[in-house]
Length: 295
Image (tube, rainbow, N blue to C red; front, side, top):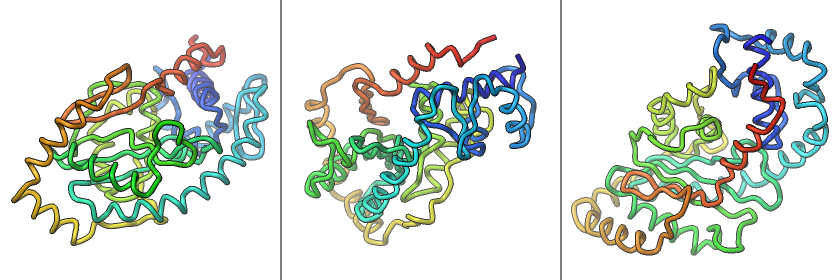
């Protein structure tokens, strides 16, 4: 079996675990790295190779999926519609964050970024924060979504915002490096601070250890927001007055309230909240798939 065949089957098996069929462009963007792949792989190469895999791979309505998973195409069409409707909500509520101090970037992630939201899912957000201000920034962000009645908590999940990942600007992630997170970070949709998201993606070059030729997160014209002048003024006023003190106070308060458990990271550089990690479930399902062919 050729390296390209292995890579195609592994890629489709991984996205099968996510219940997502792929277009040919997506297949190339998320192609799983395996030893021996050629330096360049064109869409024609992929189309030709998938054609030879008719016993395992099914092309349908512009999508590719593993045989026996024909239900995925209709499901993706429905989830695409849900995701588009939710982007209107994202635009309305997230544009306000351009006025918040210490935020360097906001990006939509997870199933919403993949246009694969189901009726019961939430909307994951990824934040890049100024160094030494992660606790205060999180307090401002959480307060905003709470008063708007849009923060996910307890049984309130459907269509709400999950504020589950904050990192300081310039950070190289040292933990939770795997195929799932590589796909998640490649698929980030910047709302504000596209340059900071691009720098984050470039700094974390380990992503290319899992994906063959992933495209960096690009600008999303639908959002295209810029940070405001009031943000810069408020940030300067806080830094020269009570900002450091409030950040320390917010750190003490939040650390006391956070319940540490598996897949939760709490530090002054990163806050990651993924209890009952979906990523680990997806990776386990992928590992069990016979179509991830190792030989």
